[in-house]
Image (cartoon, rainbow, N blue to C red; front, side, top):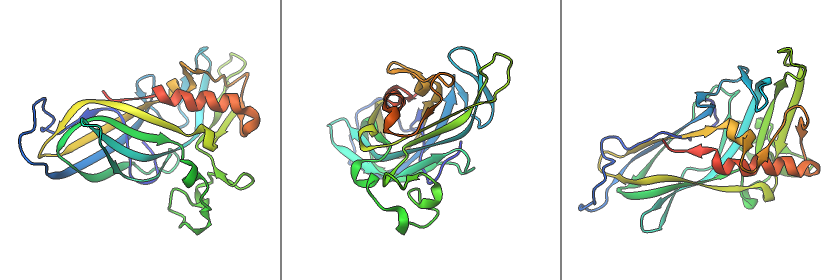
Length: 247
């Protein structure tokens, strides 16, 4: 698990206080922790490890970065509780991601967040940020020519010959206001009580590459870096709708 700043993803557990009972006491402010993990076919993702694509060809990911932002919890009454900020998930950084915050006790039904950056954030000039900030130029996620950020960066190599030689490169860099996606993950009526809640959210990378909205083929469509390849970028972005889950 590698990321920049504190945030996270899939297995939800509410310490000892996530009980299916009505809350009778006044609300309290309690700890709320979120951690994140990426998986491929239900196994933890590891940079540079060999995996199989949808056609059984070997591939390895050499770089994986993406932005998550605009985090909020939805209460049972429909009200929203915002927390956190912008997070750059970067598997080359070696930094674990965890969000630590505080929320009111009560019943929460959905987790909301954005894949990418909203239009206002996407228009920010990164020059003023310190190097450690997820939006700084030091992260190498800014398209200077477009004055916008790259929301998703995936690079690696695939075996295109059938001889287990991962020599053919693939590279996908997506990002534009039109590719920002609002994600909602059900929490199944979690009653947060006095002990607080810890939440682990999981993303399945293989579902980003092959999902209900289409399949990205490393061999036949190995590159997408601009609006010229908008169909590939849209497929990747749309597949994020179904890539997250709470177990």
